[in-house]
Length: 190
Image 1 (cartoon, helix red, strand yellow):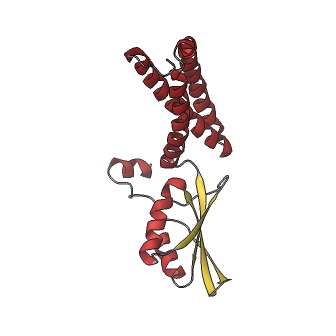
Image 2 (cartoon, helix red, strand yellow; image 1 turned 120 degrees about the horizontal axis):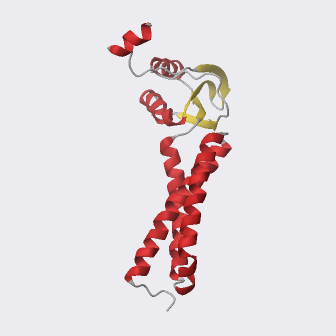
Image 3 (cartoon, helix red, strand yellow; image 1 turned 90 degrees about the horizontal axis):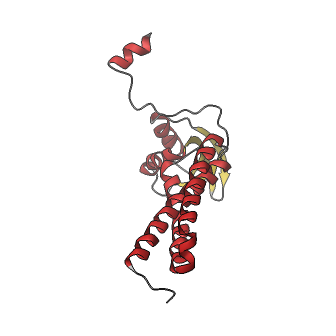
């Protein structure tokens, strides 16, 4: 039967499924690195991805003819790997983004709070649908986005914002978590 599963086939299927998740997750992250121009990371991820893919494919090619159910594990691993790769890359947060916050009444307060947290903010006055607005422009690391939005939403809960992917950033101001102390302060003075 096409879908018959013995213990060996189930174990092999789970191995194929898991390997495809890892392999495709790496491929998804590699593609994102390519789009962002991170050639070294793309090279490394691509090498590992293809090696793993070849190992998995070569180990099950003969088995698929005898046990077609392995194709299902292979396909499900591929699909799951795409989702895992996207979520993993979001957690890692490679790259930078431009954050635009548009507000009618709290522009100065939000800008001051974001600057106090260590980020550079450029503000623009403009005209919106209902009158004057302030637009705040912040360039930050992708992994810092949530931190900046929490600051803005503490001041204005319904903050309207837009994010944009950025390419190369010439200089990035980011918060320093704590001043150098102990032996780091001594080494820094030299």
